[in-house]
Length: 237
Length: 120
Image (cartoon, rainbow over all chains, first blue to last red; front, side, top):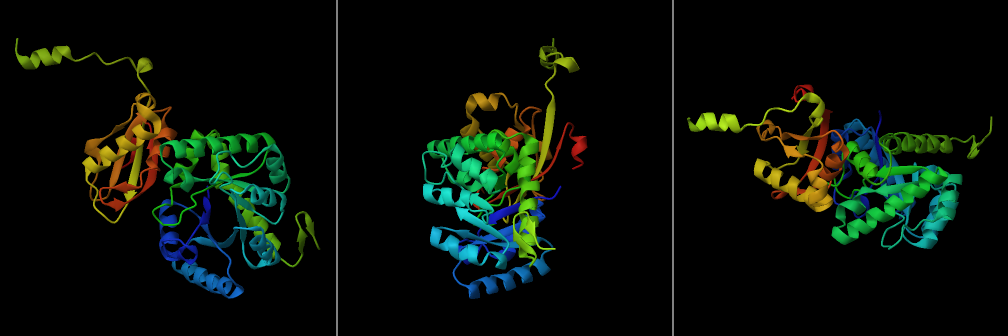
């Protein structure tokens, strides 16, 4: 089975490890592909990142995708305009407004840590329904659990479990990511699936969330890059 | 009666297979630049799992780090637990960030019902 981690921050956007360190550790841990989720600055930065990724890809035999994480609506609209220039579009969740925009935008692939800095899960039945309709994957971020301690960690886990429960009910896709900013924060796929199992997912569902769901996102992104693609389900022949 | 004979007599008779707990062995490799000493690994695993699952939760796992199977050079170790707690133990291992002075990462190599099945 192929495993993917689609939310990793490199030194390009506040991370602590280089692209090469992250890619080689991911390969050692058994991943087939990873995605560097960076913060968008300019098209020059985008081109530079693409060049760097090609270099690392050639050196370390692993699939590497380029993604951007939007932190506010302005950034999101900029990224939606340039959607075909990169692979994965992530939206930083946590703020209720951003959670809503992310779930309602079909161009978005992943909403990251919707429970970030909140006392609730950040998602309700309405948002999860629209995430399911627009095929926006709800992220289970391992770093949130890893860095939390005692009371905070238990709150985060409760909120993630709530999101998983809603996603299961409304058939919204769930994706497991490490959210790593350093190569020491990357985790074995088996660790991520086991943690998701502790949070209320069945083991086979958890495995799908780290293999089939990201694979579907990547496939969709490749289709989107073609000139024949108009919108989900509409292709010019 | 000699002391050794008395000790032998005090040993419990082994339970029949149907009453025995089903065991699983998890082999793992530590990804780290530093050398990891067994005592550091043992205390860190116990501490993390106790903190995460509590004393009651850990008592249900029958978790044990197998001392004689830890290879300090290859950084490979084996944890024994019961068949119902495999994912709990693996999830707990993921929460360990530091061992001794260095930062670490765990790679789960194999889960098997016997030590022989791990092919160490």
